[in-house]
Length: 150
Image (cartoon, rainbow, N blue to C red; front, side):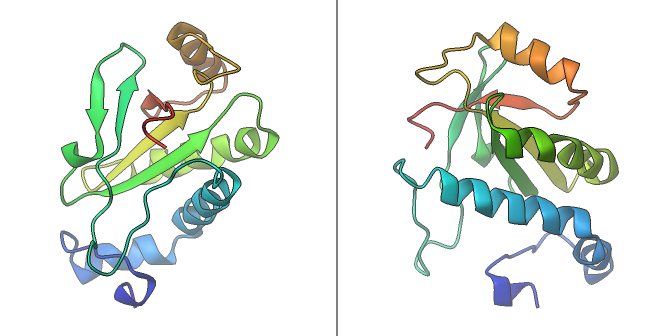
């Protein structure tokens, strides 16, 4: 069933996969990610093919300025949520991602919130993004997306 949707979860046993698949929170997160991906499709986005079954190694900076790459999480499920302070649907989904992080943010699942607010024309500073995230109760790691990551 997992392979049918193009997702390979080799590091999880069937007993570990079942609760993840049954829980609607991860399904909601995946659906939200798809919607966001479609919304930002005007940007250059990597396309996966059958010949390349892995994710592109996107790079980001965390709020402290340190580099972060998706390749730093081999064998883990990565939930990557692109969001912005000016995006009403993004703001509505943030609490749901936080709930999913609280429940699944363990050794096999990594949550990253990629803020689009540092891109033009918004140009928010990392401190402003951190303050906003803290005010919204976001406890999962926030990274800064730039046009190179998209």
